[in-house]
Image (cartoon, rainbow over all chains, first blue to last red; front, side, top):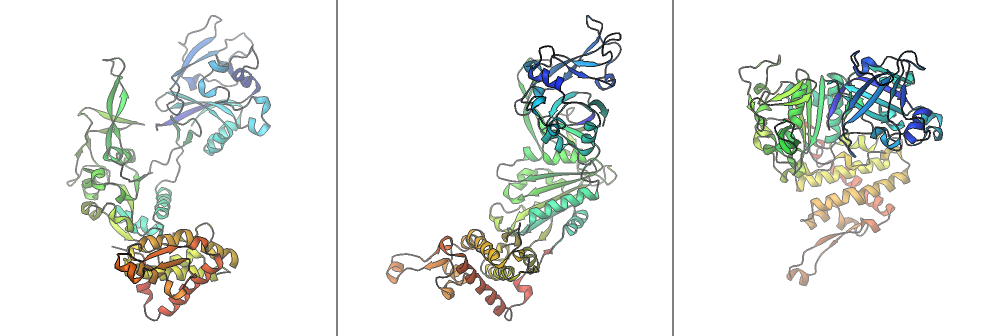
Length: 170
Length: 390
């Protein structure tokens, strides 16, 4: 067992769009969107980061390998920040999160147990995608199910329900 | 009855404490309670620091126990080793760049070394259940010296005149084990002053592995024996419906007197042989009789038979078989003269499973009478040995 102290957490509640990407329900939905907040400090993004062919800021977040049961290799999370002058400018998109291409611990059934539409409101409100940054600056990701949510420290629970998407130092 | 706070106070005074007693006297329960008290007193059970377990997919995000009060629980057994407790080697992928692929052996901290390194200037509590079930002297290795408080670092963390520095195996002179969060372990190691050890040892199992005298000497020993107060509390004799509870207490007092006389007090039966979820004194008479009969069939009688299996006539006497002929759920089968001449021996036959609850309860009530009549011949202090420490 390796225990790592974490100093920041990013969360995204389970929404229909996220469900569409992870379960492959909508051919146009292949990313998970992060809105309403500047996530650059969380990811450690600097202005020197590269841009994609459309001028969006593009960067890679290296997720550490998961070394428990059914382990996974390190995973490159490809993220863009939409440039000014386009719809939803300033929003972040975590790309390539469709079905089997998604980060393994977020994939359908391993992460969310059901599509969003098949959950009742209570179940929907206790599912989250999370990325944490440890004290060494390394990133780890998990999917929070209702049973995981119940086991979270209360202050982390309060953070996750405070808004649908965000990040915070802890 | 000894309270957890008394054990915590003994730890603070003597550093290492051994709870020694028969099975069922609540040793493990007391250890857990002392751990709770320790963490509450020296830093609370949780800190505001959060951690992720990189090997857990579910429930992986938790609070880190307060650094001021760390605790580790280990259970010794035949397979438990120095490598688990102090330091060992484990395979790791090569990362030095000089070779590609393959494995190398890297030093890996054990439970005590990990606790000592992480505790730093805080306080740490090591809980060792069943200390005599492992080979304690091999498991401790050179750390047996560091169990003595005066061989450790001074309270301010400095090296004192009597501080002993040990050279850890498997770590090179310039090598370190990185535990994360700025905590490392080097080849030269000193034990922090504020590491406490609370261990338990079952007095009946002393033949499994007698505790090394050098280890025993370093522990303050608290003897736990079932007192009438412990038994009464466990049975719930202060409840509104206490007749069966009183029978249960009398039964255990009577059995313990006999066991003590024939085998020694370390074999007595503790209060946890009685039901722990539901006190007998809280039940209706019929339910309580049924429960006590079940406890007799499946816990108490098998234990008495096991303890006295080599002495069937003594066992028959302890169980009052001659006096209650045929009503107890146990029978003494004795050989005829001819069978005895051919080498046959008497034995005890356990038929409790086919004896009804009412008959068993009627039989168990005879112990209440027995205990009352014997009180004039023996004092409370010799009948029930209280908790004591030395």
